[in-house]
Length: 146
Image (cartoon, rainbow, N blue to C red; front, side):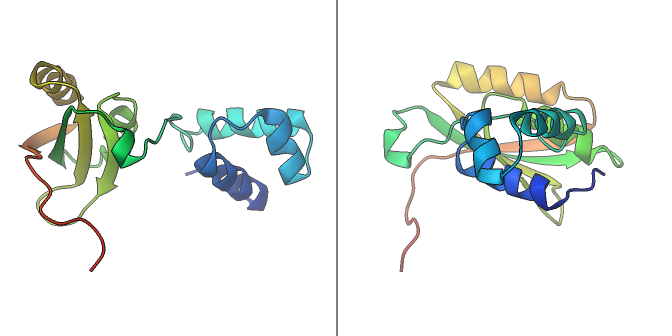
């Protein structure tokens, strides 16, 4: 596992807030050179700490499509490799480690049933996945609040 110093942690926090922030802006906010930011990003990517960059949409900005949850059981101790592969899958919107029968819970977002089928096919081919179960989101009965 890669050891993160305070600068790495601050850099990751800035990227979580805005992964499209320019190298120059990140350098200014961290008080380091652009070369330092570039080198740290490369090192964090090479070490697998940063496995990708993504876009987050407001829920109301998502137009149509299907949402599903995929519960995943992993063989042996392949969790890290399987997680990295899942984070590279375009349909995976979020990935959660869990306890109990399932090791991971993947939130999937696709436009159609055929697209969901293709995503599930790709995911099931990931080496290290022992078993999975997928549930399609039909309706939200209650969300947040009291």
